[in-house]
Image 1 (cartoon, rainbow, N blue to C red):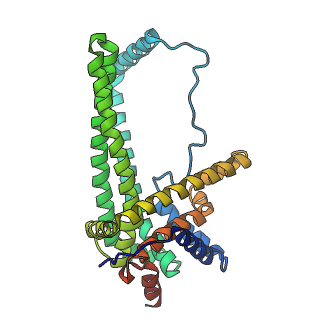
Image 2: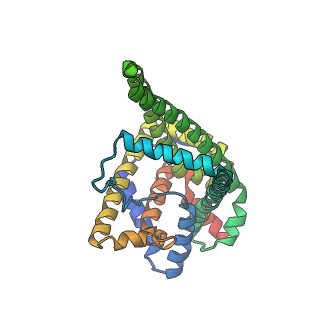
Image 3: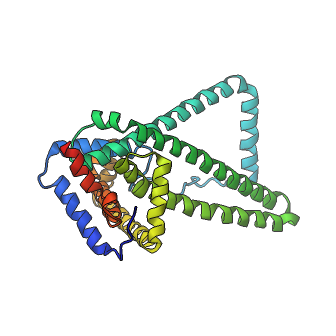
Length: 318
């Protein structure tokens, strides 16, 4: 049962997370620690942008060529004619590519669900292992995997609804001037539907990663049971959770700025290195470890049954 802390000194919590990060990674510095924990962090972060940024993104340029409605219409007609002429091989190709992408997406979610428990196990117990925790936390990882799959399907469904409403609004605005009021109303409705869902999804992601997954590792419980325990933690002191969200957001923004500065100072070479699979995860390992200890310290304020470090010390002796 979570006990309600009177208050949390978040500056002290940040210093504690920093000190724990230094102890794990630099006192002493061991290359095998970085290699194995970095590998686990890489597995856990598969399919996520992490603290990276869009290094090469930006508005496109038309090269001076004017794109008007006639040009778009010509392109559309050309694409339609091509599809009608070659549909016999295009449809099977699209189906095969879609199935391969779906299989890759499912595999990434499955592996990253295992990786989250590998990373927590290595960080909390100081055991630099992969095979044993991969087997030992298979049930918890499988529970997290299916929960993430169903949540992703629901999110795609809501996103499809918002997209359909937005497309209908755009078509109405372009095709029927006299219906512009309806089109504007549809556009506003799509935004009103999308913005709260995006905010809710972001908060749910933080709860899952910072509270639910640690509680699954700590108590060896399924994902839904961990969500129930996580909601109890939040209900115990909702303002503390809000402060934790704000503190984490500020730290994430500062981290992002620091990474952008690093990329600029290295003339984008640093960005290329961070984008490399596994190597980028090792470079960012102090950041990943710091944020994990931030949530571990937050949970520890709710009682000994929420203390991951104590549990890790016990498991390392067994």
